[in-house]
Image (cartoon, rainbow, N blue to C red):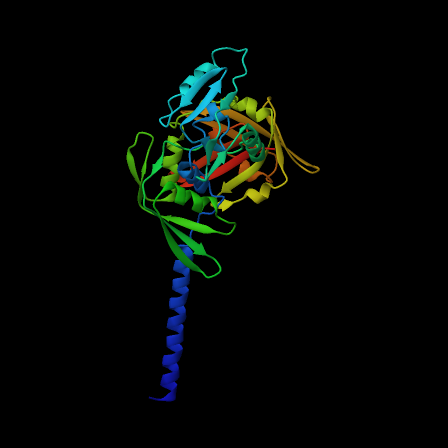
Length: 346
């Protein structure tokens, strides 16, 4: 074989190998996991698979943990035993609402065991320990569990390691394992759910989800069907909540990009006359807002002067809200494009 022909073969081989490598890298990039710790779906799924903690708020008045049953309590000098089947919670509710001139404080018969959202438990020996625990946890600023949606296992998650450019798969067989994974994600971690798998809705009907969009939509369609729990601090009217607090952007996802950092340092005032103001140091941007009903959806339309806050300008659907958080969504592209805006109390 002539040296010229050998060189030609080697040259073509290098080109072929290089083209294969480029195609492989492109395919890997195309399949790179797209979810992270701040993704809207991550937060929704975490609320689905967490240990439920809001269902007994009428008893412990917080959603950081639930009380492991059975437990004996005293309310307004009346003794109540709450069993493992939740018998007794309604009785506590009735006792608290019987009169307006009593303290409605629930006194536990210690020791008790509490279980946190991450499924860890702690034994509390007396009232002093209980008070210290409540104080250390602070106010509940998160949204409650989504208890009426149930993931059917096994569920496989693919995690992408950006440093090694390799993907690893993990199989989860229960809620506690999947919650631990989601709750311990670090900045820079990315992952994907491996579809399809089955999810039960609020009526226990099974649905096979095949994408992030479908999974997200199924959860959000059922949030309003989940039970609401007796609470001594009910969420106020939306307009009252919006106009009596200052807010900042805790999450903004627009056009498949996390734009949250774009709003760092801004806080927002919404006034009862329909105007608003965004403030960052010496900068002030005026705006307008309108809340209205669109079919069966409540919407919040936001607009601001200039284009600095353009990613916020949308007719947002009000998904849910608490005294400290407002969660908004905008859907376009026939439901395939979803943007999110979360406003947190400043």
